[in-house]
Image 1 (spheres, helix red, strand yellow):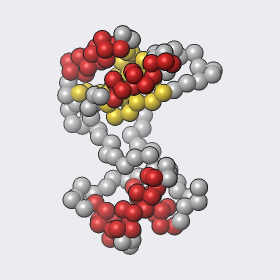
Image 2 (cartoon, one colour; image 1 turned 120 degrees about the horizontal axis):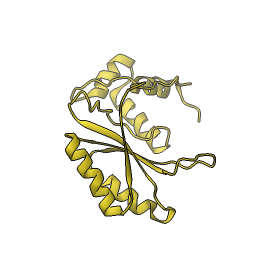
Image 3 (cartoon, one colour; image 1 turned 180 degrees about the vertical axis):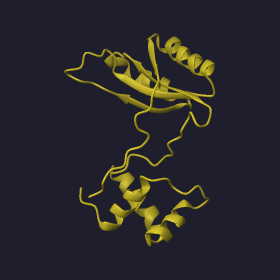
Image 4 (cartoon, helix red, strand yellow; image 1 turned 120 degrees about the vertical axis):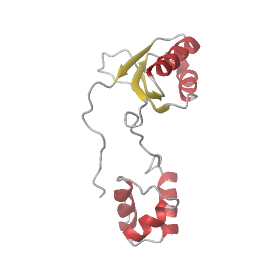
Length: 155
């Protein structure tokens, strides 16, 4: 993948906070000296090509007074699509990944993050997932944050 200078500038800037205004790409266009329509076209192109997986906010659930957890579940290979669809049907799920490793002794292969308005709702949702799937969900709540964001150098 070879990116042009325009794409590199856009990707680099997208890693920082976007302005919370009705037209954030117009604000970026002023900052980057790139036409707003060009920014939008280039982002769409990079998403279509798979260079950008998605463009979405990262919500600090704790700052909003919400509860969140990382959850793990051991899903049989033949039920991955079914269980994933159940988990993804919950509005509080922000990530859901399948992790497999040859040299990994951890029995869990599906990992997801879930947030809810409070601890009671969070545990209720995890219990619902257990009831719907018949599988045990392991909740791993945050006890300490080591990093809040990652920024990559765009070449």
